[in-house]
Length: 314
Ligand SMILES: Nc1ncnc2c1ncn2[C@@H]1O[C@H](COP(=O)(O)OP(=O)(O)OP(=O)(O)O)[C@@H](O)[C@H]1O
Ligand SMILES: [Mg+2]
Image 1 (cartoon, helix red, strand yellow):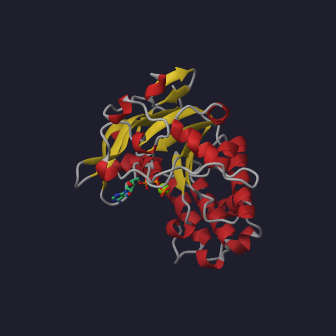
Image 2 (cartoon, rainbow, N blue to C red):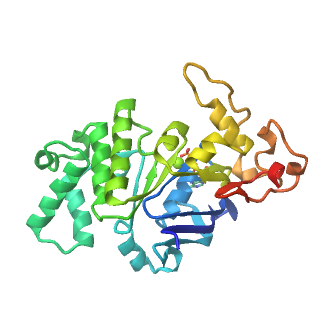
Image 3 (cartoon, rainbow, N blue to C red):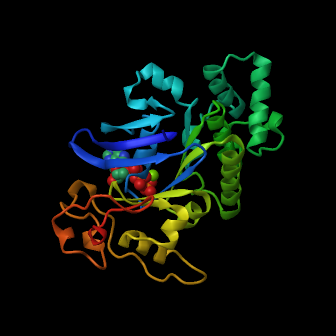
């Protein structure tokens, strides 16, 4: 049994009876890092949030399963879910200001998490706050714990948010573009921190990004999303050395290398309100297959652990 298993997850718009994430399935062993890659609007964040049973307004869960460490998330009551969230699984986002409370100091916010999940005395909680801040590389934790989010620099805020996510000692962390808003130096530091947490604390991570370079560096395994579905999935090395889907191939070729951008993906993102009946990549594909016009390809296994949704491999 894998540590995390997502089976045929379908999420969509309540009002319009329209799916936005379609039959997404993947699994992850403990301590693995899964990269979710794909352009804007392809369903990465909705999938990430659904791993905590969280939904933006208007979005609903239709069907599918999320099993974390043998616990089937969508069979739990609201109360049981709350116990799990923050404790077993936590999330960090691109913009720490949206997850941090502006009127509480970061120490107070971390203490809140500790109070909710653990039975600690006040001084033990304080010590734990300092330890967490230290762990994420925040200098002078005793002073910083008294700061409000706006008093911290962007990099420190990001670290404070990570400390808060780690407070419940989660085993699974969803990181949704956690470094996108940071400059390159801070970006590398935060990535190194997450990597270290993965190694030292056996933290399993689902890392969402549209940046190939970051995914390639941090992930063991990659899912490529396109228009709400997985179009390719493989171990990282295999995916980058041997991309099969034309979309993955274009993504890799478009990634700036040295001083050149070789090819830019043509066309725009698919409008999920008007999903094509056939292959969703058909319109943008440089080598479209005949079948793709009207038929929707299934995700098929081409070789060990390498899956692709494209008629040319059928
Ligand atoms: N609350 C909402 N109401 C209506 N549509 C939504 C809502 N949230 C997301 N969507 C739509 O669902 C689709 C997937 O959104 P999602 O946020 O998962 O994309 P993403 O891959 O994370 O994109 P980005 O890289 O821009 O963060 C998009 O087409 C988006 O417009
Ligand atoms: Mg997103």
